[in-house]
Length: 90
Image 1 (cartoon, helix red, strand yellow):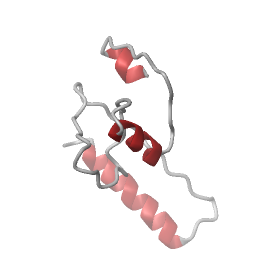
Image 2 (tube, one colour):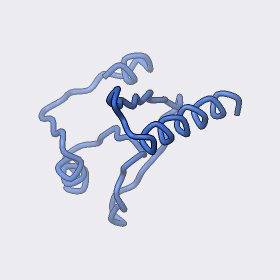
Image 3 (cartoon, helix red, strand yellow):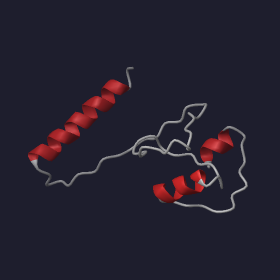
Image 4 (tube, one colour):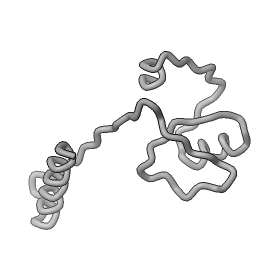
């Protein structure tokens, strides 16, 4: 895990899960911890606690569209590009 390595942390990984629900059930059962993206995180049960990572980490996401994309799809892409440009100045 690059984030952990940069922070000088190593993990003793016994098992891994990729599905969000499986990861959350492992955590809920007290069998481990996980680093998950906040985007798309479902409403969590009260017995799961979320803590921010320090230092804060950032993920870059990409958007792909077809060369023959419709006008609404291109407008959506333009809106994303505009929002992304604005977020760099905050």
